Amino acid sequence: MGEQLLSVGIDIGTSTTQLILSRLTLENRATPFTVPRVSIAGREVLYRSAIHFTPLLSDTVIDAAGVRAIVEEEYRKSGFDKSQVDTGAVIITGETARKENAQEVLAALSEFAGDFVVATAGPDLESILAARGAGADEYAKEQHTTVLHFDIGGGTANLALYQNGELVRTGCLDVGGRLIKMDKDGRVTYVSPVFARAGCPAPAVGQRITPEGLQPTLQIMAEALEQAAGLRPGRDRLDAFLTQGTRWTVEEVPVVSFSGGVADCIYDPPPDWLAFGDMGVLLGRAIAASPAFQKAGRFRGAETIRATVVGAGSHATDLSGSTIFYRDITFPLKNIPILKLASREEGGGPEELARRIKDKLSWYQDQGGLVQLALALRGESNPSYSRIQELARGVAEGLAPLVEAGFVPIVAVEADQAKVLGQAMAALLPGPLLCLDGVEMDNGDYIDIGAPVAGGAVLPIVIKTLVFHKS
Image 1 (cartoon, rainbow, N blue to C red):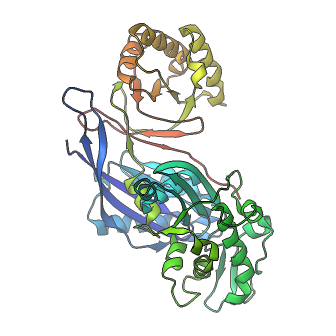
Image 2: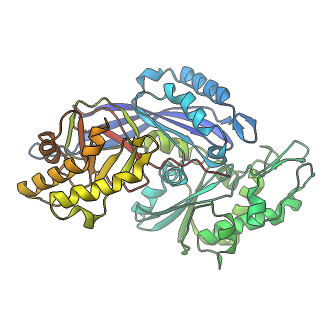
Image 3: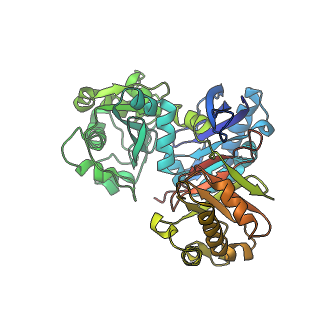
């Protein structure tokens, strides 16, 4: 098939802001006698921006105009126009996602991201994009091993555990290079509240420090990472630095890998420990000197500081399954919350299914009533014609309140049956309707759905979690 999409990745991190543009190549890998199986067959980075320090107006406010100016200038340098972009992601990561105006910044960048682009922040998605951008997933698959990938930036360390190429777990620690900032003379200008919460010693603002003076702080942060990898007994350090709302199960891993700005300071630290005006150089040195990490196998990915932005531009987008049905839909659809039924709730007759759907619609009501959402189902393997008709009646009746409120009925099925289910529902519901398959989602996820590609055979999608951390 060979259809191509231009994808943008914009990463606004605690320390740096970056942009890449990639070409995604689509290919139909099905035989002429089977339903289409369109997938992303190739990813090529076309342009990498310079690495800019993220502009801030204060410790709690991002300089939205400054970020916009960076993106605008990098587009000009790339030679691509914003109107050419088909898909991609804008990611606000680490401590930057805690800033008061994080959502305002995303809105300011929306015009540079084409008709279909994700605007998201959340440690789970960050962890996955960084690991994939670095190639940790592929390494785990090719070597038939388990890899724990650490993406350590200015404010957080995002964790992604892969076994034989499959994602097993994600997590996040408040460990990063810019949690303490210094001027050129080594005088402290900023200390993150993370240290007080973690009960970790840290210097005071205005105090002049040396590498030796920071050693107790660095040692404890490195030990938290070691415990996350199961390379140090216990979990006291780990629990102290776990990001609020994050859980992490400890098990010893055979291979670790690193990306993010601190990774560059692990592999190739600059001689000046104050090179970046923060503790990043010293944190990288502490991790490199760790006997525990030296003992573990280590995979050095293709990307370090650029891993997240490469992942955002090249790996955020996926494609819907082999069959889809849509009628009178205005694309793109953005930030649609997911309502998923458990497998046991999908059984029974149409009346019972409709009741269960209606009962759960109340989860997504705001003060004005129902909101637009997408219903996620597992579906069934090789359902009969009569069973499809029952499912269609149950889903159509269950989503009737949504239709009456003026919203589009959207159904996402894991099994390959969206087209026949959509056709059956179309006879029961007036107006717009969308059914897609090959999509695995859960409650708490959101989905972005782009305009049809590959001759209308598939829809580009991104599944994500919209989380703006609170300090």
